[in-house]
Length: 110
Image (cartoon, rainbow, N blue to C red):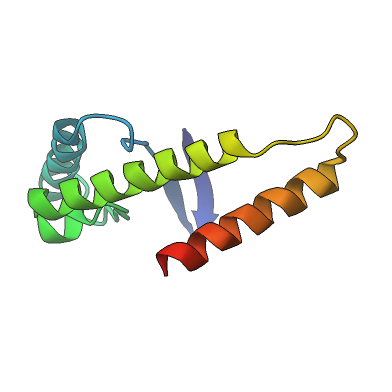
Protein backbone atom coordinates (compact mmCIF):
# COMPACT_ATOMS: atom_id res chain seq x y z
CA UNK A 1 0.00 0.00 0.00
CA UNK A 2 1.39 3.42 -0.89
CA UNK A 3 -0.31 6.59 0.27
CA UNK A 4 0.80 10.18 -0.03
CA UNK A 5 -0.19 13.21 1.99
CA UNK A 6 0.68 16.87 1.58
CA UNK A 7 2.77 17.95 4.54
CA UNK A 8 4.33 21.39 4.90
CA UNK A 9 4.60 21.95 1.13
CA UNK A 10 6.13 18.49 0.73
CA UNK A 11 4.55 15.23 -0.24
CA UNK A 12 4.81 12.51 2.35
CA UNK A 13 4.55 8.92 1.21
CA UNK A 14 3.52 6.17 3.59
CA UNK A 15 3.96 2.52 2.85
CA UNK A 16 3.90 -0.64 4.89
CA UNK A 17 4.73 -4.28 4.61
CA UNK A 18 3.93 -7.16 6.94
CA UNK A 19 6.61 -9.76 7.57
CA UNK A 20 5.20 -11.27 10.75
CA UNK A 21 4.41 -14.60 9.10
CA UNK A 22 7.46 -14.64 6.84
CA UNK A 23 10.80 -16.22 7.66
CA UNK A 24 13.08 -13.95 9.69
CA UNK A 25 15.45 -13.73 6.70
CA UNK A 26 12.75 -11.89 4.72
CA UNK A 27 12.35 -9.27 7.45
CA UNK A 28 16.13 -8.79 7.62
CA UNK A 29 16.44 -8.54 3.82
CA UNK A 30 13.73 -5.88 3.65
CA UNK A 31 15.41 -3.85 6.40
CA UNK A 32 18.78 -4.12 4.64
CA UNK A 33 17.18 -2.96 1.38
CA UNK A 34 15.55 0.00 3.13
CA UNK A 35 18.82 0.96 4.82
CA UNK A 36 20.55 0.88 1.42
CA UNK A 37 17.83 3.03 -0.13
CA UNK A 38 18.06 5.49 2.75
CA UNK A 39 21.84 5.71 2.48
CA UNK A 40 21.96 5.95 -1.32
CA UNK A 41 18.75 7.71 -2.42
CA UNK A 42 16.30 8.75 0.32
CA UNK A 43 18.17 10.35 3.20
CA UNK A 44 14.94 11.41 4.94
CA UNK A 45 13.44 7.90 4.84
CA UNK A 46 11.85 7.09 8.19
CA UNK A 47 11.21 3.50 9.22
CA UNK A 48 9.10 2.17 12.06
CA UNK A 49 10.01 -1.45 12.63
CA UNK A 50 7.91 -3.33 15.18
CA UNK A 51 10.59 -6.03 15.24
CA UNK A 52 13.21 -3.44 16.26
CA UNK A 53 15.70 -4.82 13.74
CA UNK A 54 15.96 -1.42 12.02
CA UNK A 55 17.05 0.13 15.30
CA UNK A 56 19.17 -2.69 16.72
CA UNK A 57 20.40 -4.90 13.88
CA UNK A 58 20.01 -7.73 16.39
CA UNK A 59 18.71 -10.84 14.58
CA UNK A 60 18.58 -12.87 17.81
CA UNK A 61 16.31 -10.30 19.47
CA UNK A 62 14.15 -10.13 16.32
CA UNK A 63 13.73 -13.92 16.33
CA UNK A 64 12.88 -13.96 20.03
CA UNK A 65 10.29 -11.24 19.51
CA UNK A 66 8.74 -12.95 16.49
CA UNK A 67 8.67 -16.33 18.26
CA UNK A 68 7.03 -14.77 21.33
CA UNK A 69 4.32 -13.07 19.25
CA UNK A 70 3.67 -16.18 17.18
CA UNK A 71 3.33 -18.24 20.38
CA UNK A 72 0.82 -15.75 21.78
CA UNK A 73 -1.19 -15.79 18.54
CA UNK A 74 -1.38 -19.59 18.72
CA UNK A 75 -2.39 -19.48 22.40
CA UNK A 76 -5.16 -16.96 21.76
CA UNK A 77 -6.35 -18.91 18.71
CA UNK A 78 -6.48 -22.14 20.70
CA UNK A 79 -8.31 -20.36 23.50
CA UNK A 80 -10.86 -18.82 21.13
CA UNK A 81 -11.43 -22.20 19.47
CA UNK A 82 -12.16 -23.73 22.88
CA UNK A 83 -15.01 -21.33 23.68
CA UNK A 84 -18.47 -22.81 23.28
CA UNK A 85 -21.26 -20.51 22.19
CA UNK A 86 -24.97 -21.12 22.17
CA UNK A 87 -26.93 -20.76 18.94
CA UNK A 88 -28.90 -17.92 20.47
CA UNK A 89 -25.75 -15.91 21.23
CA UNK A 90 -25.78 -12.29 20.18
CA UNK A 91 -22.77 -10.41 18.87
CA UNK A 92 -22.53 -8.64 22.23
CA UNK A 93 -22.70 -11.85 24.26
CA UNK A 94 -20.02 -13.42 22.03
CA UNK A 95 -17.78 -10.37 22.44
CA UNK A 96 -18.37 -10.33 26.21
CA UNK A 97 -17.50 -14.03 26.53
CA UNK A 98 -14.33 -13.60 24.45
CA UNK A 99 -13.30 -10.62 26.58
CA UNK A 100 -13.93 -12.57 29.79
CA UNK A 101 -11.86 -15.55 28.61
CA UNK A 102 -8.99 -13.32 27.43
CA UNK A 103 -8.94 -11.50 30.78
CA UNK A 104 -8.73 -14.82 32.63
CA UNK A 105 -5.89 -15.90 30.34
CA UNK A 106 -4.01 -12.69 31.11
CA UNK A 107 -4.45 -13.20 34.87
CA UNK A 108 -3.09 -16.74 34.69
CA UNK A 109 0.05 -15.57 32.89
CA UNK A 110 0.53 -12.34 34.85
